[in-house]
Length: 436
Image (cartoon, rainbow, N blue to C red; front, side, top):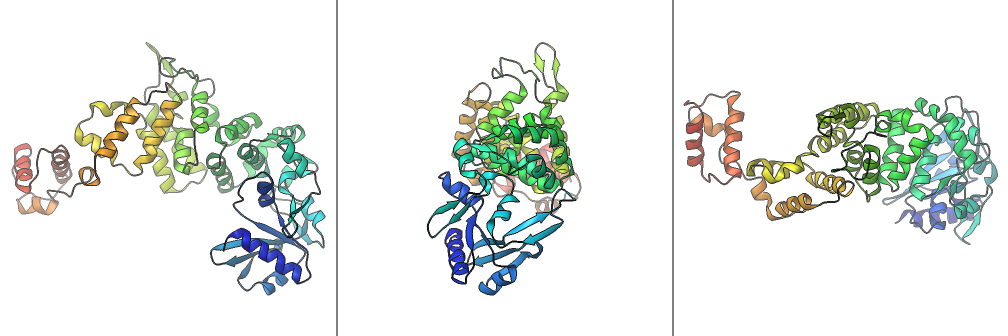
């Protein structure tokens, strides 16, 4: 069962039981925009206990806030009781929640007008109490009521305004934008994990370039990732980067992202993060050591924003290896094969393609590497070892640090097709390393 089917069924059952019920929020907005909604939410006057009574597979996930999760097979829908909120002492959650008998107060507590529309799924009638349909037509993100009050209630709304504007291709309404610029510093009170999740969605849901430009315009980028803001105005050698400074180059990469993984998108954002610190002018503009510095800075950013260790490892790898493509034409065969068999190499290759398209536009190296990758099978990239540590012990070698060097040398020769048998491998070992 799909979420939409489940949501419609929930509304029908609630109404049959004598309750008001509507689809609400993003699913209504996306449907009116001709987009496919990801999630479906239901708002009702039924209290949480009543909802769980009516739906066997349900649980209260936010009893204080009147939220019940209803499941059917793999689909799930949040059902929330109409409510009004009183006070937001912590800039995140209401101090008090009052359940309401109708939708008006429930709508007025929400963040932006385009997210506060109700839909009667039986008649497809849209109930708009705050001018959300007009704002959809005008393509603007506007806070409900006083924008300063809305941002002070939940500080995460500051970055959510940017995310919705970027994802939908909307402008932020001027009064809302002015409040955002005044209050942007409140974002520093938000838990890093919540900020990370919003940044992740900006990077991966579409409109990443617009999102980061808006983060810059509002002051949020300076608050959250000043290292990225530092890319602005850092000149690059025009013979390699006719597009302009490092910021412009990075924004062009973000613009070309198409449903990326988080790690690829973050790699695109941070691949040149080390350039401001390593800028110098010699025979031309140079960024000596920018890769190593970039890995260090990226580690600080990603750790600060509480990315997982696996995500950090892959993003750092993308930064660490993004300049190696220029050397692939002169790599030894063993070095090239090791490069091509790196974990998630497809992301490395795609970052290189975006990097080229966002600078000189030449894809010769990308095409050569891709062709070589397609030509080589898994067996050629990761052949079964000809020689093992046990073989070395049986040949009389004593286990120790040298084993790693010996086995690496044997694998080099194997990857370069200089040996095919264990006997040839042992002969190479005896020739190149001291006798056991």
